[in-house]
Image 1 (tube, rainbow, N blue to C red):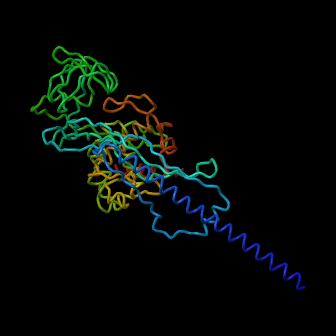
Image 2 (tube, rainbow, N blue to C red; image 1 turned 180 degrees about the horizontal axis):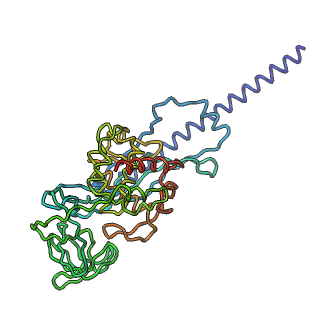
Image 3 (cartoon, rainbow, N blue to C red; image 1 turned 60 degrees about the horizontal axis):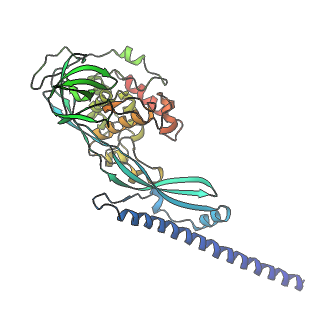
Length: 417
């Protein structure tokens, strides 16, 4: 018995020694991983510090769980069973411009007049990727840096008591609305500029191609964006023919989960205000006060404005989320799962948030690549799967039931007509 006990004691000592060695190795691996991640982050900082000093500093994002205690046992268990590695990389992506809205009491009610065309900038986003073996198991955005600032779009919206429903035709004389407008050789955003003309210059419409007009200006012939001209002569008031609106029964009959989201809702400005007013859930009246901007988004970009509103309601809980309150971001746009609050975009006004998400949906989700869209641009079609709610859901949200939640609010709004 004594001999057996001695052997058992010896075996226990060996096991304890082995466990101690393994623990020391695992601790070393853990420390090494932390140092590698830190070094990767510092190396990114070093690269950026060598860039042009006029460009923005890196904005690092904090993870919501950073304040929690580190579970050492969990780390050891993971290292025992899994071979992990991390990488930090940067990606260049578009930095979308924002839109500033200004009221003009001399313009027909609801009319949108472009004063300055927007231009996207560029940003570098910093992403940390985690692998187990060769398989990518997670990636998170940990920072961003603006490399090329964007130019904001500036528009005036009419607030007068009269409406204008006139449709511009071939042969009409029109007037340029931006401070300066490029007349281009081809109907493309980056085409050669033949001449830049001042605001209120008189043009004649020769023909139309998608979102472009072919015009004559003095001895020049070229292309301009259709949303940069108006038939209303400067400093001249026109009489109203009334504001066209459709009945509740007609508008509601078009609602389904398979409806084309690139077909406008058809609601008038007053109807947008009606369906988004006096809702108990809208505790801070964010949607009520900004109802007109869903109408303007529909008018400028051709997207269903109630679809945009329903996304905002669903994502922000009627504007009651922290991101919506603090950042005027109704859609959680830019938010990365593990750093949702800090990575979400901030806006000066809710109007800019509404305008941007409408443009993003039209450009990336609702049109195939090459489709002519707003401002003379073409869709990238990067996340295009179709123009229905379920099609958008595939790339827009990780929640597979997202489209049902959005459709519920669309039905709710249509029923309030």
